Length: 98
Length: 132
Image (cartoon, rainbow over all chains, first blue to last red; front, top):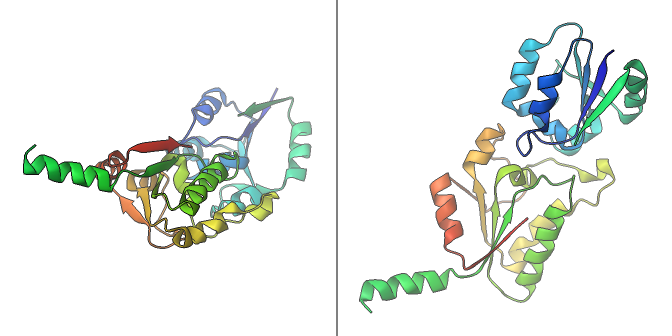
């Protein structure tokens, strides 16, 4: 019973990302999209990367990050919107944080 | 009225223009575009306008952004027209930049990065404030 988390808000402006991380479970995946891309530089992301194991994966929509001049990092997988379709099939539930 | 009071009043009147606070990231809402439109309209009518960038609003100024990747008309490029509208007072909150691990690489020049105290002092000099 894994969950796909679609994070669409900046953690600097809303509490959504913190709430997402509070319910994050093993086998879950996170996709940073739209203003969620800004969370790459948030302190919450540092704590998440420390917590991360082989079962949790983090993705970012490459075009959304590039439009916002956000630099890429190696720990996070760069994907496109078409890849999100496949992710939704690989998880039993989806939560959109917006 | 004492001379000090007169001086103080003169300073207040001198700075009594419109302040526009930008507090939203550029691409996920129309707030940034709306604030820009208002600023340029006031500029067209030779009204004094100052721009303040605070919170996620500082993302509007970061260099190397490209809204066309998101199929959005890139209104940020219009920021370079500010000097033609005599919009010269552009203030950026230093704390907001630091929180977001952003450097001072902006796509427009002649901006002022201010610490919290100076930022609030600059804002409080204005008679009218709009926040987007």
